[in-house]
Structures are given as C-alpha cells and as structure tokens.
Length: 300
Image (cartoon, rainbow, N blue to C red):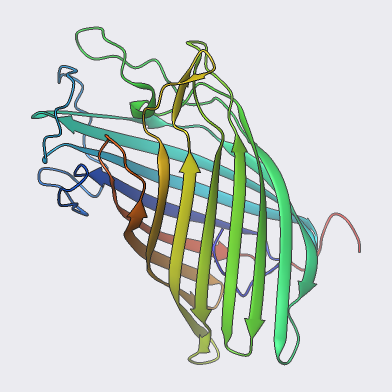
C-alpha cells in the first residue's frame, strides 16, 4: 500500500498501474511501444487472433485503475480491499486488441507484529498478512467472430486465489528500507485454466525529508523481482508467460497534510530467457487520503 507517515490510520485512494511487455530476446524494448496508449483506450475487439513470429512491433500492455481502501479495527490490525478496473491490449503481427472491465477484487488483512516507529534513531515495523482474490471479473469475453480471448487478456481470471505477505520497514534517522514479499496460491477457472503459484518481492530504499510542517517527501530507489511458471491448463504447466525477472527504478512519495501522492517507474534489469515479449516497463501513480483516526473498534 506504499510508504506513509500515517502508519495506523485508515485511508482511501486511487492507484493507476501500467505494465509493458514488448521486444523479444535480443530486440529493443520500449516503455511505450508504437501505436500503444499509456492511459486506458477504447476497447477494440474486432482484431483476428493470430500467432506471433517474433515481430519487433508485438506488445502486451496491462493497465489497472484501482480503488484501495484500508480500515484499522485495532492499532495493529488493518483490513484492506482493492477494487480494480483492467484494460489489456495485445498486438501480434499487426493485429491489435484491447478489452476492459472490472477485474478481481482483493480482500486481505494485516497484523502489525512489530511497531516501533517513534524512536529517536532506529525505527522498525513488521506486518504479516493474508488475503483472497475473488473471481469477480469477467473472463468470457470474445471477439466479434465469437472466439474467446486468451486468459491473460480477460479483465478477470475466473479463479479464486489466496495469498500471504510480509512487509518489513527499517529506518535509521532519515534513511530507510522497506521490503515486501508475497506468495500467491492460484486456483483454476471453469475452463480449467490458471496461473502457476507465484512470488514477488519489492525492495525500496528511501530518504525521508520534511520540507515544512505540512510537506514531506520520500525519494526512493526501487527493485522488483517476480517469479512464476506461467499459465496452466488442467493443472499442467504450459510454459506460456513464464516470469523470472528483476526490475529496478526510482520513485517518490509526497505528503501534504493528510494527502499522499505516489509515483514510480521501473525498467527491466534482468530476465530469464523467454519466447514471449519481455518485460519493458512498470509505471504507477497514485493519490491517497489518510483519515485522522482516533478510535478503533477493538481496544488495545
């Protein structure tokens, strides 16, 4: 949910995420491939589905606008919900498709196992949690010719998945480090399609600078690692869309009173060999309003 000085305050926010895959092994990778759109475009469902032949103009784009809510029922116990709207595009051999829709809702809870954030020199926080991804998004959208789109192009997955995560924050005076790791256990949809279990790790080194009573800024250096064996069919791994890559970049969190602005950009640093378009860019921008919460349903 990002860095925030409002450590145990309820909040609501919007987050926009953009992910680009383009260029095959040995080819140039672009943040914004030719003919693509950073923001959510109109749907285009009339392109025929064809295979690819390592065309350098091929790409896959995944855009998500999320409503994110967090509510503390106790100073150490938070409940979270994420409602996403997805817009996915693919271009293969000159044919482009874009489909959009409400995606799968995430519900999860986190417990602040360690919470020492008022120390003069060293501060730390450890959150452990678990959640569920519900099959609320459609995964049966078809082309104008009546052909069902591929699983990853659909707004939803059609499967119910579970995940666990841990977030550790360590601060020394104005410097800090945030490490977030998660492991996702994925189910199958009614077509017996799924994604292999996956893991992600996000490492963030930041510097906390208070500009005035109301303003605060946290520039950061970021690293993101993800691994998954890709798509499955009837419980068997197909090898499609395997993920094993490391990304790196920069970000910044700007706080004004109760409002937080977040932005970051990452590019591929390393990726295992794959015959699919390679990870090129990951960009996010967000805004969050933090509530001055004084009371909790559960007492200490």
